[in-house]
Image 1: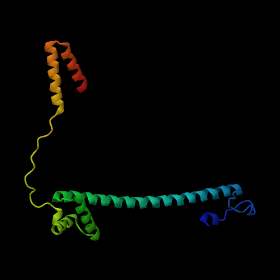
Image 2: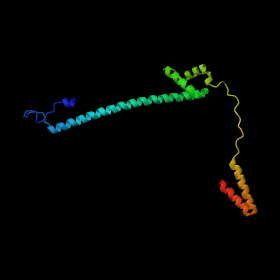
Image 3: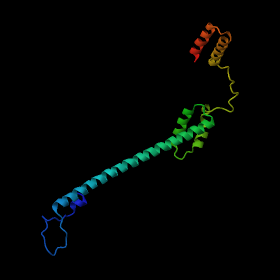
Image 4: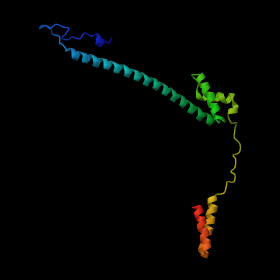
Length: 174
């Protein structure tokens, strides 16, 4: 039972009235109302404490996830700067090593990984950079020149067939 329920509530029915008594009598209906209000307040307190506990657990979980993501991003940046060829594999191995050792530093793990698994990293200078190859010709410029040629021809000759050809080309390209 709650402390409110165990408390003796004086009512007109249970306590005899006396003139020299200094206690205040409360009607039965009002005492019942007080008890119900107290019980509902206690239920609300219990619900709010449960919600608070859930919120704290969720906050702890999310902060753990956030720290994992930050560690992974730091690993990815440093491994990319170190010249990792296969970044995903290097991140997985480095993350496993970080989880095994609680006091391990990211840079120490990367240096150890470079020594043990050299095939995951590029060696020295990457060699000459590849040169550009000839790209595909821009079709718009060719069609634009065809269109311009047809327009000039139609304007200079004034022939209806030339004008018709120009309008046909213009309809296709615009």
